[in-house]
Image (cartoon, rainbow, N blue to C red):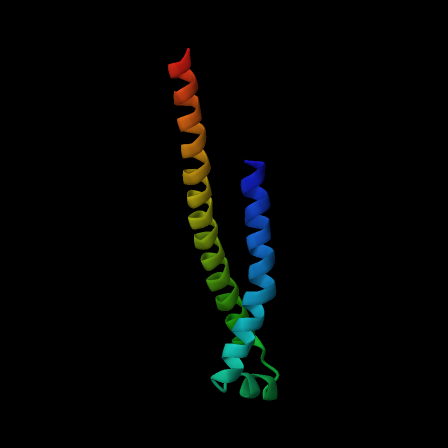
Length: 90
């Protein structure tokens, strides 16, 4: 459980760091950043940051699940085979 909390904390941290920057870049790339700054309203930029952070968090969670499943499959199979071989020797 503690590992899950640490993983989700890392995902949130990376999402806010990288996803927020990506969201700002996308908003500016769409040409929406300059009008928002000109009118003093940063709502559009904040929405872009939020969407970028959410997309990054989702991607990191999916990648973490895939890598975790692969590692668990490879390591778990090795330990299961070793345990079965040990049981047969007894």
